[in-house]
Length: 78
Image (cartoon, rainbow, N blue to C red; front, side):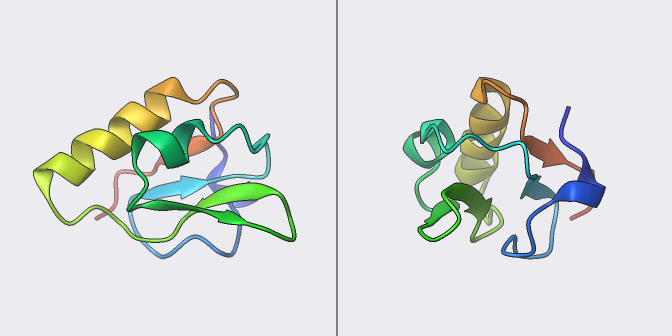
């Protein structure tokens, strides 16, 4: 389970975030490319844009559920 105290500072404020257990597998960027981006220097993903539509919300949930190391969190805030 992702730890919001260990989330990357690159994450934009909001409900979803990526923490420091990310292994840069690209699964989230493949599932929700409009919401997740890669930090090239650090070699990890982060939330670049919080979902704005129901479709984006579902894609972010899909990315979270598909993360092999559970590095994506949902703190319930909007």
